Structure formats: C-alpha cells, structure tokens
Length: 209
Image 1 (cartoon, one colour):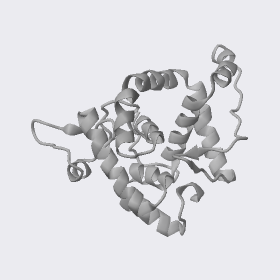
Image 2 (cartoon, rainbow, N blue to C red):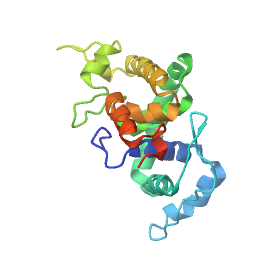
Image 3 (tube, rainbow, N blue to C red):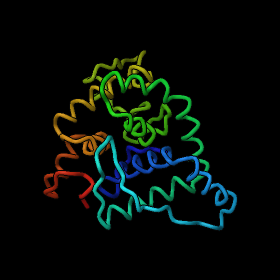
C-alpha cells in the first residue's frame, strides 16, 4: 500500500500513525480482550476513544471530526488482521535497527511508526516515485545527504535513509515547532503543509479540516 498518494483528508496519514502507535502500545490485557473477535469476523466492536492520545509526548487535540477520523484508523488496524499482523512482523524485524538511530539523534521514539505509515516498513516505491522505508523523493533525499545515481540509491539503505530522515525531521521541527506538525509535514511535504496551514489559519494539524 502506498502512503504518498494525495490524501483525501488533511492530516489523515497522521491519524494512521497515531492508530498504529495505539495498537502497538495496547497492554496485553487489551489485546487479549480483542482476541475472541479476531476469531469471530462477523462480530465487530468499536475501539474505545475514552482516553487521551499523545504523539511524541504531545497531547493530541481531538474534536468531533478528528475523533471520527482517528476512530476509523483504529478500527482498520484492529480488524484488518492480515495488514496489522504484517506490520507487527516487520516492526519486530526492523525496529531494533531504526530505534537506536532515532535515539542517538534525539528524535522521539514515536517516529518509528511514521516509517510504518509511510512504507509499511518495505523498500516501497510510490506512484509519485518516493522510495525506500522513509519514502524520500529524489531531490529531498539528495538534500539530506543520500547518494542517488545510476548505480546507487541510498534511499533503499535502511541505516543511511534513517539518518537522512532524522536530519529532515530536525529541520522541520525548527520550522513547524511541534512534533505532531512535523509528522504531518513529513508526509505532505513541508511546502504543501505550510500552505494548507496558512489557508486554514491553523497552527496545529490536528485541528484542521
């Protein structure tokens, strides 16, 4: 599945990130409670949204619209079993390599899940020709130090592309101020993100329509 396609709702990929984080962080008791429903596909129950949600230590503001969109992503990740299980398997494989790089560069751990939302932790190529685990476009990849030529494309190198992603994320943090906005800008591209925020006269992605 490609996550660089033009999004229908402003901020939608960020809801996917938060939903993935929520699923990964559920306690064993909460996951066990869902287990019977995995065996009974005809019985679907809504995931509770009674608790507060955070991203990179920042509280996620929820209104009726954003709560509805987050609820959708939580339901998809809870009951779309094949995709969710694949995400879990890929996370166990690649997170041990990605996490120390984020920590060394002072990037919050929650950005692990941005790579899941961007590429499903695969060396994917999107319809816009973004490539690799972190879905870099060629100009951006080269700007942040990756080598791309006829023989080498370091967007496919997990360690090097993660280091480039850290540099990119840090630059956007200085521009967009909070981590939640950075995650949204990463997916949309900083220029499109900034334009959308100005158009809607908002300062936080999660309160945009």
